[in-house]
Length: 168
Length: 96
Image 1 (tube, rainbow over the protein chains, first blue to last red):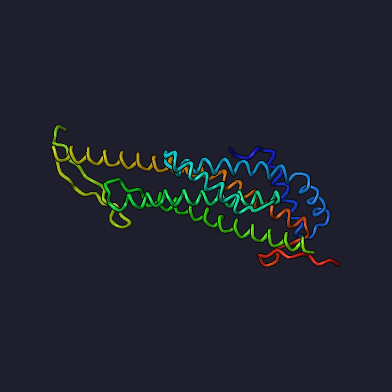
Image 2 (image 1 turned 45 degrees about the vertical axis):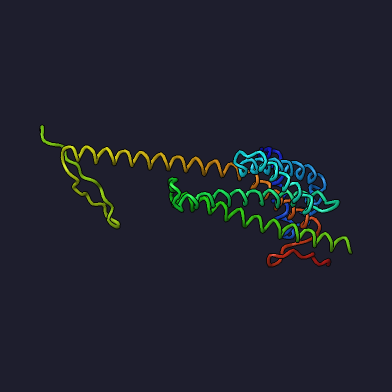
C-alpha cells in the first residue's frame, strides 16, 4: 500500500527544488514550476489512492471485526472527504483533503486503542500493559494528532493563498 | 555435595540489587519455579507488546507517507507560484 520508488524519488526531487527555490535560486524555481505542472497530477493521484486505501484499512481495525461499524466509518470518511474538499477541488486540495481524512482516521483509531488499554488498567481482570508500551503508544498518537492539526492548517493556508491568486 | 537445595532471590533496592535468602528444600524449589514462570510470562508479554507496536506502526506508515506527500506538494505548489516562507507564514515574493 506504500508509495512506489518512482513516486518517492519524484517527491524527493520536488522537496530539493522547493528548498533551492526558497533560498533564491531562480533556475530551481523555473524547474519547480515545470515539475509541478508535469508531475503533480500523477503524484497527487497516487498519494490520494494510498490515503484512501489506508483509511479503509484503519477503519477495519477500528471497527474490531464489526462489519456495520466498519461500513459506518467508511461512510463517515466519504462524507468528510466530500465536505472538506467542497465543490470542484483542485488536485492539490484533493490530496490535502485525503491527508486530513486519513489522519483523522488514524488519530481516532489510536484513541480507541489507547482508551481500551486504560480501561484494562481500571481493574476489569485483564492483564495490565507495561508503562513503556503505553508511553510509546501515546507518542504515536501525539505525533499523529500534531500532523492532523498541521494538515488542517495547511489546507486552510493553501485555500487562502489560492483565493488571493484568483482574485488578483 | 548431597545437601538440601537452597534458594536466593535477587531484589532491586533502589540502584542496588540485593540477594535475599528465600529458603531451602521444597520451599526453595517452589520459589525458584515461581520466579522462572514470572520471568517467562514477563518476557512473553514484552514480546507481545513489541509485536503490537510494530503492527500499529505498520498501520500508521501509509498515512504518514500521504501526510508527507501533502506537505511536500503543498510547499512545491506555493513556492512555484512565487510564495516563500517568512516566520512560518507564506508570503508572496516582491517583484523587483
